[in-house]
Length: 334
Image 1: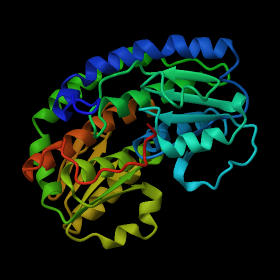
Image 2 (image 1 turned 90 degrees about the horizontal axis):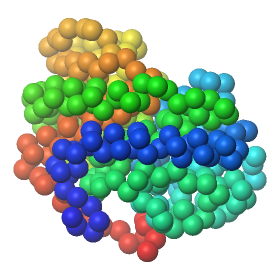
Image 3 (image 1 turned 135 degrees about the horizontal axis):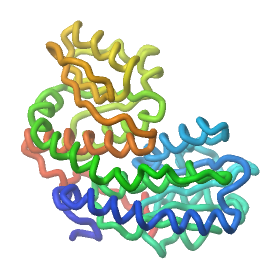
């Protein structure tokens, strides 16, 4: 363990087991928060940065699908103090030390401050009215289980908000995760060749999968040092797609993403489609099929694919996934 983190390979190897822990740890805390009236009223605003911001996408989608207004906010993109609002703010930070998220929480009414963290106690947990913790799961510096378990916690919060119920399918997710992991072990290296040799990579995801596209591009930059960008699919179609060239394309979704994947592949652009659809591969088009699950559970599986593609691309380039080029002293508080 270095600086509180474990190696990427070790975190990956234990990820399914750690997800089982999170899936067991979180529901009792949510039931307690429900009983205290903390998960009710106007829909929550999730505040985070980096991977924590990406992890919130499917939870926002779940809440909106239930008719509850909800948003996610990049913690560094809002002037402070944060405007007065009736909406609770859920600070999302795996370490509980994210500078920007702490800054937002400090400016809002204390009764509206909630948090989901992995590490507790931490600076953020000392500020909020209610905390849900993942249980101090050991994580890698380029986050693996810290990210996927955060999706679990946020997804359960979204399902439980305003007297909702946590989906019963979560208990089966670790075994589904293991099956996909086994499938990807046989394919990830071959698929990653397209990414490792590209000049850059575009990731695009449908609605709730936008966060998966964002974290996929983040991981590729972090561990394989390939320039990459993440988009919601509809945003990608409005101009960004036009720069396709010596670019790898990773699309996450179903009907619309399949159509985009075929368009890119027919134009000679290497494309990987992560989808629930049963569809054949084609020249320049590879397909990774995942089970059809609710948005947050699906996002956990998509994250696994993103992790394995990124780490294999790093290995193909001769890079250590745990070796970072730049380190900053102002993104985490002491």
